[in-house]
Figure (cartoon, rainbow, N blue to C red):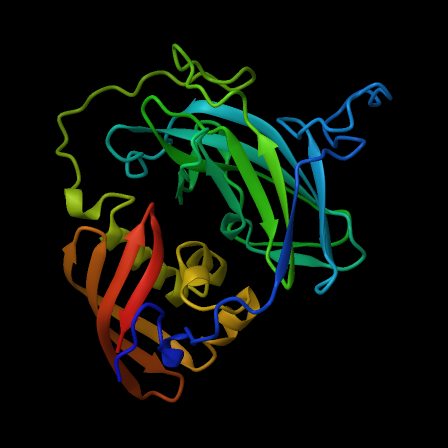
Length: 315
């Protein structure tokens, strides 16, 4: 039976759940009294309505899961340079990277997928495209999944593809749950740098020399819809469910990250074949091998926007 809009394939780990489960959310723009990167105590004269920016910490919690974290935007590197010739921004874009520090301030373990919880947009409200890369010149990337004991820290960059003439003006970090909590930071004034120098403190990277090597085929670029779908299933087969969630699993069902992972309990591997790509729509055939050795076959389409799967029609 054909279903539209949301993936209906429980055998490949994606189950249909109702979207909008009555969850509530709160957005905080107020920095904590003591920033985790501050070297001097805050002054009592600081305005109480000041919005968080680079260097500020915001405390986030979800009472339903017991998660409590302190998140700091520690640095912005713009422009950032790729460290891998196969991980380059789309034509006409540049990399801009934001470094986050996550500290587990709760009493229990904090396990989550940060890449699925971080977003950025420009001054006009346009969402920037998250790039899944291994590393950039700015430094190590934030891991796709973290498991922090109380007091432990995760530190890493999150990289976005930013169109020429544009700039990230705001970034958010969200704890996803029944009581979702979001922290919001202002990044500069939202205007692109006049000469696009690296942010102070970043290691300058010399311009990459030109080579006569042929460019990769345009249909398999790092951010093409076809590649995103292939990366999604590669992450599933590698049991890197945090990466699969970040690449679009979060958009294919209305449940939590834990229920997304549980959906793969009877799936041994997925063999996806790309049939065609038309704009943002990728047509596939799927051979899902079950843990009992049987096979289930599916076909349909995935829709990809800004490097993330946003919808699917699978039957």
